[in-house]
Length: 440
Ligand SMILES: Nc1ncnc2c1ncn2[C@@H]1O[C@H](COP(=O)(O)OP(=O)(O)OP(=O)(O)O)[C@@H](O)[C@H]1O
Ligand SMILES: [Mg+2]
Image 1: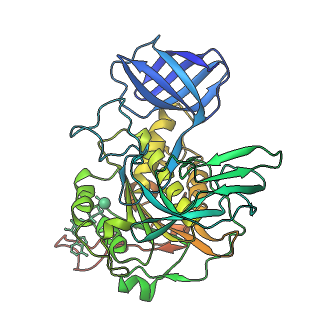
Image 2: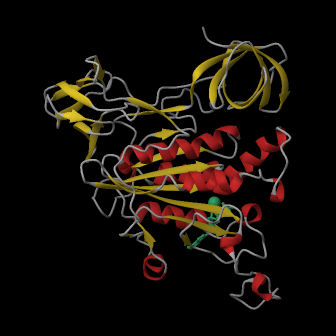
Image 3: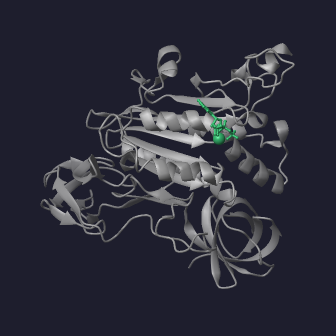
């Protein structure tokens, strides 16, 4: 029987729930309000009280409303059809939603369950396989999309049968695996994975050795980034961070690009929607949109889902990395994600750290950055996730310390590359081209 609860306190989207059974941190729950089911995530448990962050507006919610816990964490659905998709932070497919604005409590399926994919088997009956080993492949646009043993499978399995080459939907069984107890487990093209857990189904994670061409000549010449490295673009508002990031998304040498618009303005995301289906990828000659997935959680969307959006984006990158592909994750902007964390931390009345950000902010950001990297897969091939974030200065960065000792700032240690855009003054009192901060 699942755990239920009743709402006992509401502070904006932080809701306190008294529960009648066990709940786990990061577990999901549905809060019923006026016929809608609002999705929420447990962020703290104290005795029989759970604090949950609601991914939607909590307008109209009142004490006594009922809550049902789902017994699982926030998960992404992984399978063919993610590329060229446009999702929100909870991986709802925005293109299949009805109406211009998102309706509260409406959740859509991220994958199209009716499309037929041309499947080619790669594994043979009798093969011994472990999680993330390739069973077959489908063509997703031009990209060979590998169908893998689900990441959640523990231990070694024997392939009992693999479907012959042909057209299948994502929900049809394409292989049957036998576990060590002799039990048969059917495998489809779809799998689920909790977003906040790093996918570790690889042999080794060596230091990155190759350079990733961003296609922006000044970066590649003077300050190159490694394939599987991490970097960030700090700079004040309106200095061109988003423009630079879009340029990297257009020219960058990557097989898959995931753009997480985390707290960005909606019109900037609309630019991607309108431009990318028209522009041609210089590396493959196909449309840019065919290799791009957009996770869109703009500044007018609920703040709690911002945090989910960067994790969703990272998990999708890790999924494609396990296929031996080069992925590039662009997050715009990590400072607005930090702002969302700050809002929740303040509502929970936690002891504030620097600038009222949560004290464990640098640990949260370091853990996230650590999920990027180049990996050696079980079959000897390599895959990489390169992460480039960007930050508006007033948040994570101390104004004065920023140009001189960026490594001393909270959350800065994980970065390997720093592309600082200085604020060039338009003030007539300051010499042209001078950074006002350099003048003191
Ligand atoms: N390389 C460039 N060449 C010409 N114009 C530019 C360039 N970079 C930025 N701009 C101009 O500056 C404007 C603001 O840039 P952008 O939106 O990238 O800033 P931002 O740093 O992302 O700001 P915010 O922190 O507010 O998100 C752009 O709309 C564009 O007009
Ligand atoms: Mg911007």
